[in-house]
Amino acid sequence: MPPYTRREFLVNASAGAALAAFALDANAAEPTSEPSSTIKLTSSFTTVHEPKPLPFNPAKLDGISEKLIRSHWENNYTGAVKALNTVKQRLVTALDDANTPPYVYNDLKREHLLRNGSVVLHEYYFHNLGGSGKPGDALVKDLGDAFGSIATWEKEFRRVATGLSGGSGWVLLGYNLHTGLLENYWLWDHQYSPAATLPILVLDMYEHSYQLDYGAAAATYIDAFFRNVQWEVVAARLEKAHKIRALVLS
Image (cartoon, rainbow, N blue to C red; front, side, top):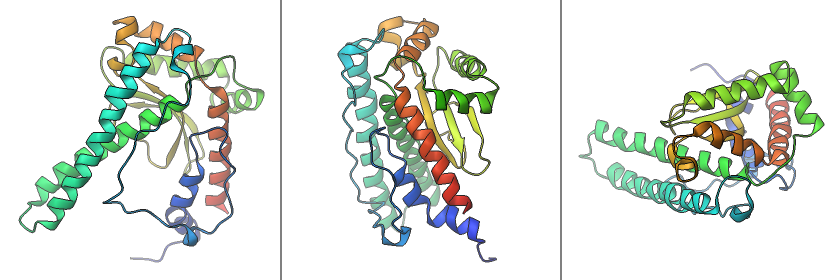
């Protein structure tokens, strides 16, 4: 195998440090300059995942009920956390068993991918809720640079979301560390994730995210989602994504 270029090394070896700095919380501390070699990684096999608490008061959302949010968090998100832990325990057992057929092991790896995606996407979704108002000037400029105008960005984001109505999936505004592009992505389920892309804004379009409040009226839920976006979190994610790309390209 040919040796890595400096850029490839930074993309791969520094990924843990960069993504660790990409905090969900808009008020999180700025990334440090600590070298990636000093960061201790936790065990991939034995780490037990815990549900993260809601970062907002679910009784104070506009048009999304506390009952819906609590059901979503307790049943769907927390259920995904429990399922991820179970899958990882079974992977350990299967790996230690020399008689486990590779195709059986890969079935578990598929579940690992699915459950991990559900946990991560739900956490990003909940953490970009709880706000109100409009995006700040810097974010408006970035969206305008990427899409022509913020109106064009929102038009496409809503159209992708509407196309997922009545089924399953996610809409993700993502910043691609490889291409440097800020784009909207269609995700059919938890397994889909654009390569080298950091989530900036995440919308859950599974029916469990709106059915209790709106039945099949997904468009009304999308309206409510936009009324509750925590734009400060979105802006902080994009700012950190820019910094991470600068690190990758340095």
